[in-house]
Image (cartoon, rainbow, N blue to C red):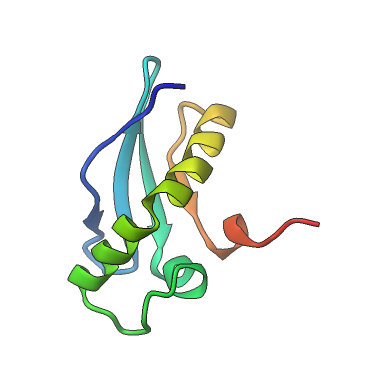
Length: 90
């Protein structure tokens, strides 16, 4: 899958990073919650928007890998990540 991701931004309420993924078939809005960034990507609690975006950039490859998998399953629906998406499955 050849996926292009567009510039991320902090949601208006500050609770998520919003970004878009696009492939040949569709363009999908994605979001990863602040809670997931804090729990699994070491975002400090109460971090400002700049720090949130830096954490997203630092962990971009892992986040996009999960986004691509979710996008394949439901290509026409928005992708939203929560803590549950990063819990190790046994």
